[in-house]
Amino acid sequence: MIQDDSYFKLTQDTALLSAFARVRRGERALDLGCGCGALGILLLEVRRRL
Image (cartoon, rainbow, N blue to C red; front, side):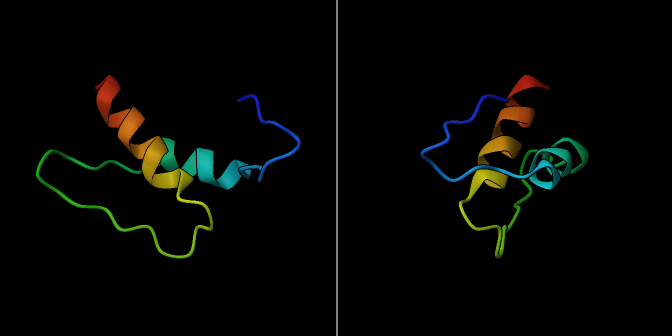
């Protein structure tokens, strides 16, 4: 993951959680307190690849 130094950087736990969590079609996921909403975006990308 390439990150720009002038912006907020994601932590490793966000990337690992997005690889671990599975949201099936028709289900919903709620991200509370992550900071920048990156987890939701990463979950969408993982689901798109399946």
